[in-house]
Length: 376
Image 1 (cartoon, rainbow, N blue to C red):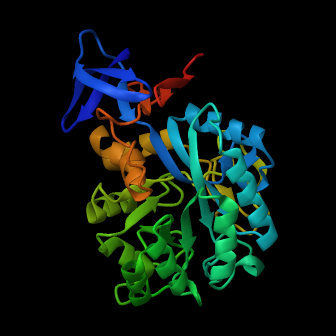
Image 2 (tube, helix red, strand yellow):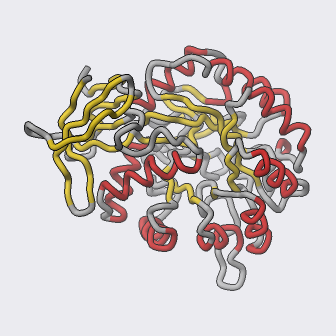
């Protein structure tokens, strides 16, 4: 058994503890015997990312790209990831899902890429964001089945627009099957339609307030339904561009910390500087401030990483680390039914991120093995 002495977040305090790790699991948690300098959080879980380090998920061709992403995420404290596939042609989406599924059969050396998030193609043309208008589709169960079969059980999450013709039927069938988490987004749904979708099985809202009809006092729309429903988790992109800090605080007060999931929605430019990049079939321009946009000015993903999301969420809300751990790990694990991770507790996977007092990642541990160490 190996041991690490760390500070474990509790309400109003940081508790010095010794964590024992054996066979990839947390075997014990006891009072620390020596000085502790690093804060231990459950490893961050990113359920919505399109890439980083010059790798775009929609252009992945094989294992080396996946290894690059796995190590990139680990450097930023992420221990579990869903790769988000953007809407593309039918053939390209099937080919890509098949390639990703094959590449995820073996460990990649860094963060654990646990599966695939399909962001489309059954989305609203009006709120498509960076999705190509000619490629978004009406609900098509046969095609969705083809994607799921190509994914060989690796498709774990899907974003749908419930108002689109045929999509409500897809939601019902997916919910009955139970293997794929269902999120509503890129949607023009009114409040009533969105609530019917929740009743049918939707359990999340993709990047809340972005690429969806916004709340109005007389027309709460999909965003209002997401905020009201106790069943629904809300993805938040806390890069300072997608949401004003006051909006983040408002959501935290409205939803509570048990239903917030911080996501990166990162693109291949994440971890890099300004310039021209790709996001699926799109050209993207990243400014000096790190904001990513299509040439027509529409925002297109982000350059955020979850360690930065941790620091910004803390700055925006003033919340303690015991609450931030929920937004950055615990809630995502619950949504995806990853019952073996997302908390620092005996019997759970030893997936940990150790942070300096300034919130910088010092060490990332996946299943008990250090996959990133600052300065190494």
